[in-house]
Length: 225
Length: 225
DNA sequence: CCAAAAGTGTTAGGAGTACACCCATGG
DNA sequence: CCATGGGTGTACTCCTAACACTTTTGG
Image (cartoon, each protein chain N blue to C red):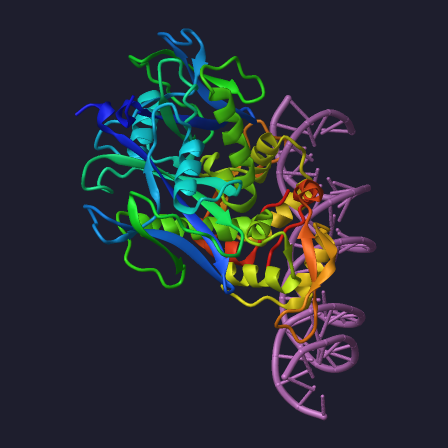
């Protein structure tokens, strides 16, 4: 057996928020191994294609979305992870803003569905491990980057934002402390508009302003909730 | 061109400390492309071998060391990174305790040498980028993990430890603040012994005690120098 | 007027930072 | 006795965490 026999795939863990819950996109496998099991969307890397291009391609094939947050997660290469042979996968994770996403019908996967991260089905291959790792990374990044904002639409309320943090960290956060911290960070601009639908009292809408953020990392101001 | 034409390598960025300076191990290439250039040690992953096994194998081939700190860094897969074709590499970084390391003569690399991270030669492929990324990761990890201790022998003085932090972060740290923080973390046990050689006054030796550390991460006590 | 989510301030404790002098030893 | 690196404490600032009530609206 020579080195040429190793094959390379990318798998993309796609997160979003729905009803204040962290969701992940899974596809049902149509062929063996693990036929009919749920799996993280992914596929083989093509010759001449970068890893990130391959991940973006898989992402668009499944969801039709472009221009979203994408980050390399980790590479998994245990030779026994795929019964068909030695398949190394480079895992990515992607964040989609809360809201309806049209899932595409594809040739590869008959079915694609969002699952709550806290209610996962049995997964194919080592995909459960990949998902656990992705969640851990997302939790860590929440504390020192602005990934939290990537999961919201352009305009959102402070309560929306707090719910994102609570859903991912799986714990309650004090409302006053949360708002004070966000105010201190100065990465939010209040909009003229308010949200009124379904609310007893209108809630101010905000927008994330990325350019202000870079300096904060150097100043050590973070999000340690 | 099919997916089978992508080849997979591992490259291992091997750091150590010498004379209070952060050093990295490089090998001189004996064949094209980039013949005679310096490069990060690495090689093809073998079928049936895990990525970590491959990294450990390369590490041992170059240095003869085992049982050292090894962590996956990132995967680089730009199709133009190797002129011979599409070669994806999974980069690792390894930390070797300060002290003399016997570098092995190998078939692949005629020459292997330690270089100061601040005085690097021109490197083959995209290895400069990999090295920059490894240094960034090392700096970040220094602040919230115990990687700093991996670069020292079992017994060390507080000044030794401070020099490691200073070498990696490339800045002076206040001695009193550094020592107070280390005392607060309670991960060091003083030994009975002192170091006397070459010192005006003997310096207490310490040992790192890993078991005490895990809880600190949860408590949010870190190393933000 | 009642229910429900929006919005707001204070206090106490702990970590970070800046800063200067005495101590022990070898030559 | 002197040069050299080892070793120690204090004051201030700032962030964190805990905690409860008033406001605005729709029904």
